[in-house]
Length: 162
Image (cartoon, rainbow, N blue to C red; front, side, top):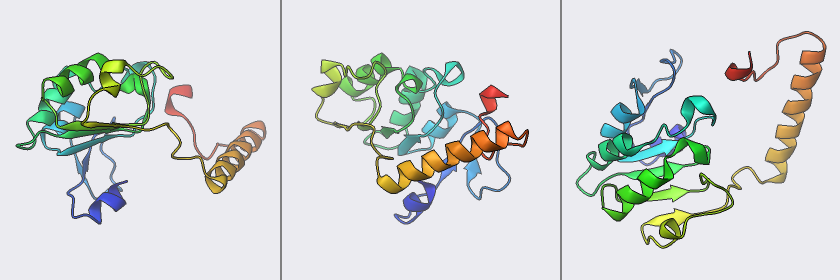
């Protein structure tokens, strides 16, 4: 995503549990700090208890301050990561300029208030629904299973499952 955004001349920054030495982009310590400096906040984090409502009213207010027209939230992570009630409120009050969402807090139900907003683009979560990507996902799962059953480190460990 960062590589594609750079092609449009965007400045890239990120937040995570910790800074990544191998990334050339600027690290910010929190989602609010990142939103404060972003015109577009793209959410690509795992779901779960640690990230539930990571994008809340505070983060959305910070995103709204980032540009004169307000920022844009793009969530391609998990629906639970965004406080949907806070998002709807921020959109209705013009705190942020818009949102692009392909995941929702209570899938498959999408709130009518969210669907009614003209500054929101809603799509089904199908970004990985290509034959090649699905085959690669299946191959990786099989490889990880083989490695695990042979008492070897898996290629893509899930930090929360250690």
